[in-house]
Length: 287
Image (cartoon, rainbow, N blue to C red; front, side, top):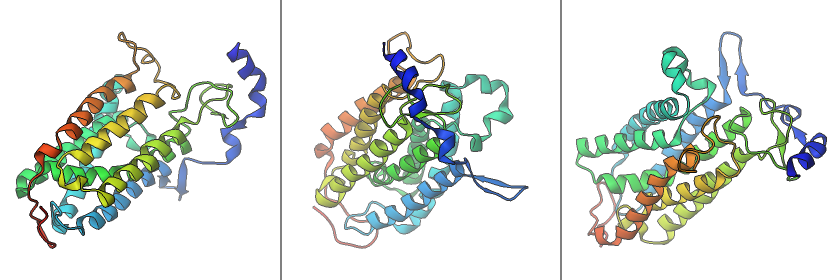
């Protein structure tokens, strides 16, 4: 019944092509700059700026020089971890075409892999400089929603990772997804994973003492992202062949389960890790 209603109403919906959006931001002939690339640059730069704002508060876990190094390491972690996980979990056929696997500008990044990459970057930085890696992770977690927001907007501009078929008034017909209207799930994700998650973490950081309880902010991030991604998988069209795995979940939901469990654990145990915080640079001690 529902598919027939969708088909009958399809002509009344927006066609993505009519929006006049191009995945290419600038074309100068020998070089094309895509919005997808600019989204990653914007996420990293804005996140870096916000991280420095967070470090101005008393009890910061690292100095400016550490933050500058971290941006470099984290960028490598995002690119390598995000692409590697995407290829392994979603597009293993690219292993047979290594050069295609390197084409980041064509899209295809796994956030879960990016998380692993950034975590390894933080561990390396903390061990190298004698920092508390969990507290550093808390601060970085507050900055990640910027990248998620810009990334999901880039997914929409690329007309990729569209949603499931629907008849809601704001549905869009995407050019590579057939003739039926679909949820613009990329925008849902930008709102929940980007804006809402940022506001929750900002409130905890600026209005509570969460930053003095190692693991609470990164735990909140993992839980918030996990809940958002798990629920939005019901609106987002899963990758072909990965709709329902043997255990009844999509691949996106499956990869989110460890994040949910880890987030709950970090939040539940955060108070027990609180101790006197001595700042790395500037400011006073915080009990």
